[in-house]
Length: 380
Image (cartoon, rainbow, N blue to C red; front, side, top):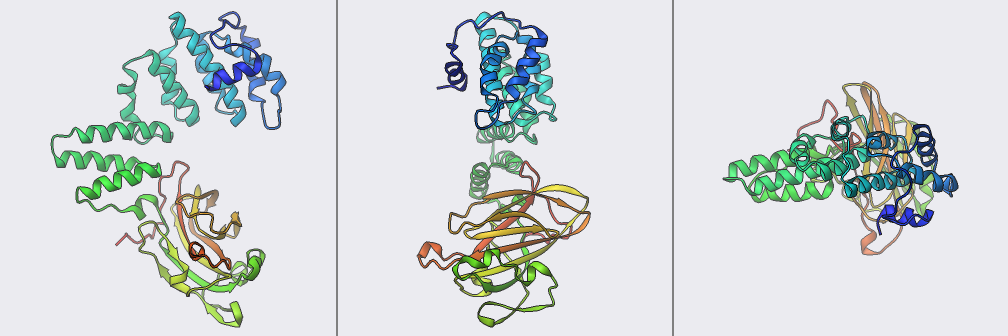
């Protein structure tokens, strides 16, 4: 069942029925859009949205760009209501043969200030009315901040690569596609295609995995209590200091560089096989400018992440899987040196699948494009 059909049934309007006049009054339309934008969790604004949706769905096709723009500030639930109303307007225009403002919709798509979801919907609408839009626009989406639009452009480039005249042209197209790829499945598929052609693929650099670390541990995590204990590295990251670790042993910081293609930091290999243990990993990330970044981490273990002493992620979950970009948080980097500290807690489960003590971390923008420390050493 489509989203529009579901909302239509909720408010008692059958799909395909005539809602009201094709052109709602501008003021009434603005109020109706505001009512849909106010929809939130726990049935917030739901009653008001039932009647407002009918007014928005009755708008003329000339109002499609305005309705698309209202998606920019809408929350997830409100976005569903507004999108369903836009689809009703589009369906009515297509059925009746009424024109839509194609130039304005295309301008909306090209304006990356709009949210990716709104631009993607605009693209879907435009291609229904303009058969040449896909060919005209796709090439410009390879570096688009909308991963959905980017994905389609990459798929098109891969199709072109398969039709290439020779291996050189095919490899060049696949390299372009790989460089633009941000979705994990696309990256994996393109890496495999390039390797099959004899190309070396630098996954650590493509993702932006941090590969150089200082490690210290083990500290105690018996009974999983260590997760909430502030061990000395949380108070001071002086790498010259030694501390009392698990079972009274002395522990100090060691250098560690991972050569794993997915940036995996294997704490069992670095610090010895341990159960009920806590470790810390520290890296200095040098930024060319102040900026907001994504800190994306994957781990089989409970983790905490600090950036410049500020806690930006905390996940007390053990052996729930290990995936690239498993957890994402936002952080602010200063110009120059920034400290990233990771706490990784392993529990005492003895099953074979519960033996990994590890993590991977990368720094990127919100699209997933790697951001590098200015002193990053090239992947060997």
